[in-house]
Image (cartoon, rainbow, N blue to C red; front, side, top):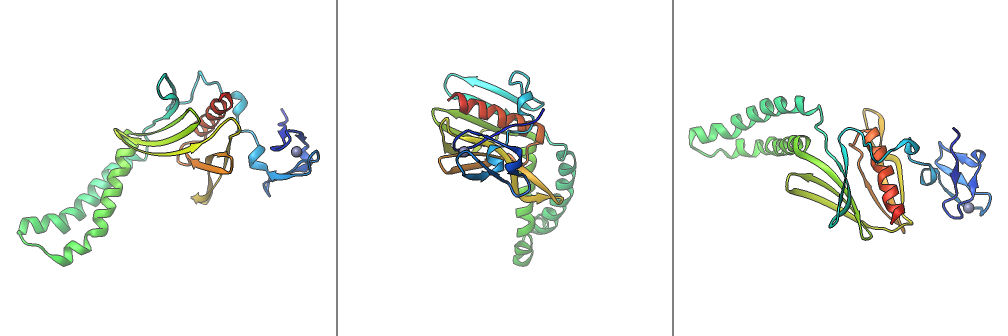
Length: 220
Ligand SMILES: [Zn+2]
């Protein structure tokens, strides 16, 4: 099925000949404007998204108070490696650098300072494990405000964007790469303001979340 693209300004149909995917450009012959192709490309697989059948780890929650939220929560298999690694690495370094001081009963400035990077590393690793085990994403849209929250139990970190029905949701390349593969993120753009999120979410779930969000925003 050939995809069709519509101008972001005048909604006219844009012919494939006027699209340059590699350069991320599209030209509208009707109004003469150029735009980023990623702004007008549909979300991959969006036509097949059935909101009643979310992929693994995703659910949609409708609450009279909070409005609609899309929730993604899935234990990452990396945690199976990270827990024993942290136990050995952090356990060993923390005991060697701080535990030994407690045992000897005197403070050693050199060992304490030398241990700070290990202490910081331990805090980051433990936070990552807690997030992988108990954390999740909550993407909510209610009364003109989009809220994207990272949650670990009762703790959450939320970013917000005011938006309305003119908001555009797209999947585009992030600036950073993992193993030389450029990562994709979800971008919501409204009246010149953007909110990017979700690059660690697997592709299938990411496409579903983007499409579910696009439909929520379009409904207003
Ligand atoms: Zn146009």
